[in-house]
Amino acid sequence: MTPSQTFISALAFIAALTMPSISQAAFWDGYKLKELADADDRTDIGNVQPADYQKVGYLIGFVVGVHDAVDGILVCTPNQVKVGQIVSMVKKYVRENPDKWNRAASTLVMNALSSAFPCKK
Image (cartoon, rainbow, N blue to C red):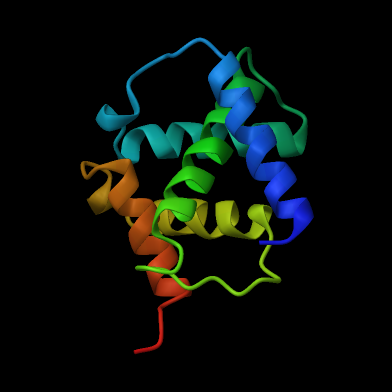
């Protein structure tokens, strides 16, 4: 992980810790990821709703947390990949698989990342 990726990961983690909890991460599913992805999209186009920036922080923190937990084990991400790319891949996977929204959010993140960055055997 590059110094800038480490900094962004640390920043996202600290932001997630300082925000009030809206739900336990263990109970997040694909519907929750879709909600957070939609908030991220709204901030990109300037159509921000209340709490969207907070939701974007949750999305980044969650995706980075799952990534860091499985990187080198189930996922082998090249060093040059940026956090924004990883989040975009997860958002794309979630949108393309609405039939899986009832599954655990962490499972969807792992599926998205392992498809994009499989470890060579």
